[in-house]
Amino acid sequence: MTEKIYIIGLGLIGGSIALSIKQRNPSVHILGYDINNDQVNLAKKIGAIDEISTELFPYLADIDMIFISTPVQQTIQIIEQLQAVELKQGVIITDVGSTKAKIVETANRYLNGRIKFIGGHPMAGSHKSGILAAKPHLFENAFYILTPSEYVTTEDVNKLKTVLAGTKANIIEMTPEEHDKVTGVISHFPHIVAASLVYQAENYEEQFPLMKRLAAGGFRDITRIASSNPAMWRDILLHNKEPLLQLFNEWILEMERIKQFVKDENSDQLFNYFANAKQYRDGLPEKQKGAIPSFYDLFVDVPDYPGIISEITGYLAKEEISLTNIRIIETREEIYGVLRLSFQTESDREAAIACIAKYSDYDTFII
Ligand SMILES: NC(=O)C1=CN([C@@H]2O[C@H](COP(=O)(O)OP(=O)(O)OC[C@H]3O[C@@H](n4cnc5c(N)ncnc54)[C@H](O)[C@@H]3O)[C@@H](O)[C@H]2O)C=CC1
Ligand SMILES: O=C(O)C(=O)Cc1ccc(O)cc1
Image (cartoon, rainbow, N blue to C red):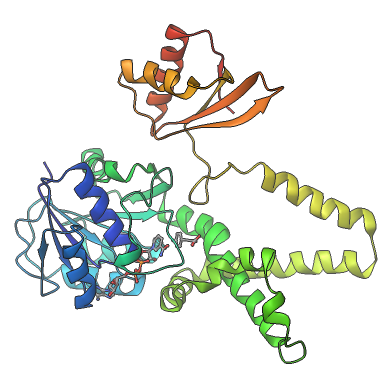
């Protein structure tokens, strides 16, 4: 049973995790520390934590689980220092960093399997920082990646998953290396591109003073993430060097490819370039938080009438099947609609298929 949790770093992510744990299980006692007193005081004030620690390593021998939710470089330093701290037998330590290989490698080296470390990364957030931007539902329907090493058991991972259940995230597992490659493509490199587009606009400002005021719409959308915390992104790039270097090379080749189409005035290739990108982009799951699609969506063909959502949720409630999201995604000929139901696990989805077949004639399908 996880009774006492220690959270180091009470900003956007640490604060959101604390709030989600407290909301699901108020009896869990959360001790919190932040190098910035204002953050930890605010965390206590909004009820994210029960108790403030005034030092990084207070008495920790009664703590069942530790979350390190600081910027990645600080996370490494804290893990290095943890080897000399007295901890409870069986304590589980996890982090929330946007990179995994360096952090997990540090944990393996310094904690040496003696202390159970499970790398973690909730794949949602914001360009905002700090406890005041924290929300208990920040990770709802997002992916939460865990990278357990050979030193931890399924039971350890399940313990962490139970604590994280209040986040309502889809928890999946992968290796630290897989994680860093995937997040390099869909998160880290896009932050570089966003910042570079901002530089490009800024460079033209002297020549076209109206540039800033004209930079609306698409430009604002694609560069939103350039407003993220610079120190955090500096450290993420320092951690994920090799995958990013490969992506730089591939991106430069990609730019050369489209540049050539423009140079050649190759109308067909230019059309195809945008048409293929549009097709792939349009196929991304709609309004999914985080960058990767859900694995456990179920689609149901339903008549389009008011009350259909409560009818379906009523069937699922009868069988005690929990749902993370439900949404009408399409109406066909104004008669039939498609309902998308999202589940945390494959077994919940299978149970839902059986349940809907038991109580209704609606067709279910998986894409
Ligand atoms: N911002 C985002 O959208 C996401 C961030 N992450 C990861 O989560 C981690 C935290 O990021 P945020 O919560 O966004 O940043 P944040 O800036 O909102 O919070 C970080 C907190 O850590 C504290 N801190 C820094 N050094 C510390 C130390 N040595 N000891 C104790 N506290 C310390 C800061 O004072 C701050 O309150 C980072 O590793 C980041 O890569 C993961 C997913 C999304
Ligand atoms: O603001 C956004 O859309 C983000 O990209 C948030 C984000 C930042 C860092 C992560 O590791 C994961 C998600």
